[in-house]
Length: 271
Image (cartoon, rainbow, N blue to C red; front, side, top):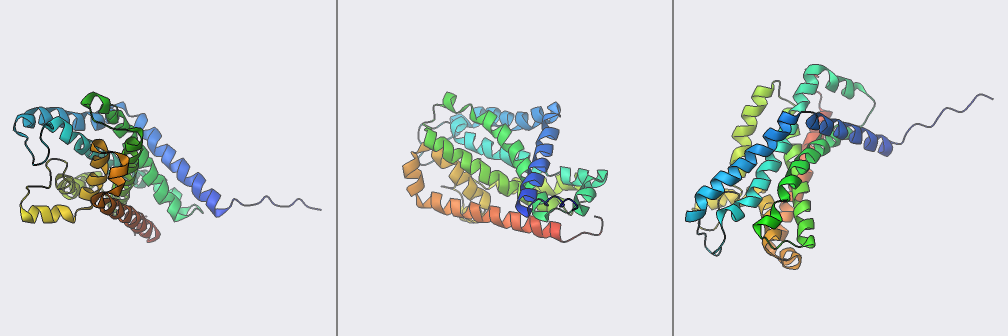
């Protein structure tokens, strides 16, 4: 009797293994480029130190007496670091296409979702690696963050990073050059960060500006990232603004992943 053929891996096992392999490849490429690590960490830290030191004497927001601008801007710098690290990690989509790696992955018998999850989770791991390093500064700022609050902060960073990376992936998929990708990302993403409440609070902003901030998903991500720094987990979770922000971010993440999968499923002429 001839031997039975070996069983094929289940779709779920294939999805997990391929996604994990692609994510590990993204993170390894990042770690092996020290100048990229230093540059990604250095820019947000310089923004925080210089803007914080310069604006603290004149920073007097309503309802935030006694808070320095260094303290207020700290969650905003975390958001900035997550933005840059997450989005610009997806530039490897263009590089992989130019080097032929992406074409090889596309013709392989693997789920298209695995490609999206591998790239997105790889970019997310890169962003979290950098954000966690900056998060170590929290005790030196005197912020009353508990272990429960820290868990909420990490959850907010994970969700935000996935949302950013999925957005960057969907845009990078149709881009032909890294220079064009950089230009589009800076024009498109910087306003999202600037209107998120990272630089200045929503209270006191002009009506038209407050309206733009209200429909900005990054502003809601900023809400769920900032709140656990200043309040207990119980009060944060009971807050209507936090619940609204969390719901918006979850929808943003789901929509970003769905759009990315749709982009990969629709083959472009150059792939």
